[in-house]
Length: 134
Image 1 (spheres, rainbow, N blue to C red):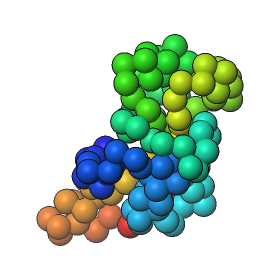
Image 2: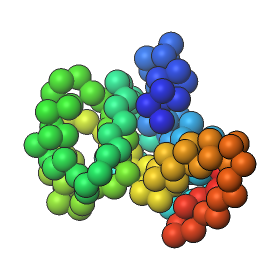
Image 3: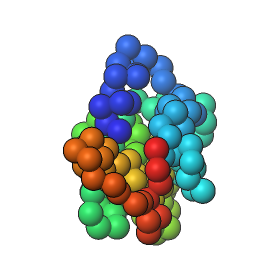
């Protein structure tokens, strides 16, 4: 996702948050998901600035971790999810934007890259437990 967004917006320093959401929706896992990417902090017309995708195990780095990213120059964080208390704290800090991409489509995007390679080797893979087929 980071590579995709870096390429998409490399020469567009005035990128708005809605453009980032629209770009994410070009990825089939996000298109097909019940939960679509959503701006949680910021407005559609807000400038995205430097975009950083933070999708890893665990629920959240917490408000202080995200604050450190924003203070280091990140304008928009793309996350799978964030607890309400973190959203509230970052909103109060008023120093960056957050787009929630969604847990299942983000997980699916990652696991599908592995599944595609396994299918190329001749294995039949049955996606289940919420994994979205591209």
